[in-house]
Image (cartoon, rainbow, N blue to C red; front, side, top):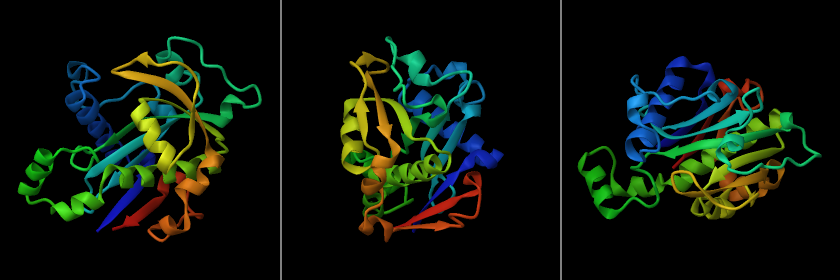
Length: 235
């Protein structure tokens, strides 16, 4: 069994599938946004056309995880509109070298904190046994997505990443992937969140330890453009 990680910008069908996945997560499950505002059942915003979109697929081409990287544009960054106070840029860093990571979403069937009832329900659907569900937990999907983000950022000379997130997610990332530092106090945005910034180069060791590299292979990793890249994690 493999997880496949794809930058879906270059494939309209997969990109629409990613937007529908976002609708399911953020409008239906989490209810962050009013589903009545998305009649076509795809969740998009003004930043999507300036973003790189990364998705994790299972072997049946179902999306099980998603994240985007919002690049600098005339629209600015989402953090600048969400945060109730100014977010100060480091004067040494140009805006063209900063992006924002957002809309991280994991299929509820694979989340680490899925309760026993949810796991039983998923098992009974005969889609996948419990032993496999445990392997394909949120941390595994999340790690693959962030590795892809790392590759994209290094190639595009993006040195820092903004993020707005809950402290629980920050604590998780601190142990497993991109290292972020808090930029200000918490504020309410579908729960208490805070602004963060992460240095891309500082994340290589946690993202690519020798042990982790054994489970990570890439197809045409250096030859093809980012939007055509395909990565795999075998279980």
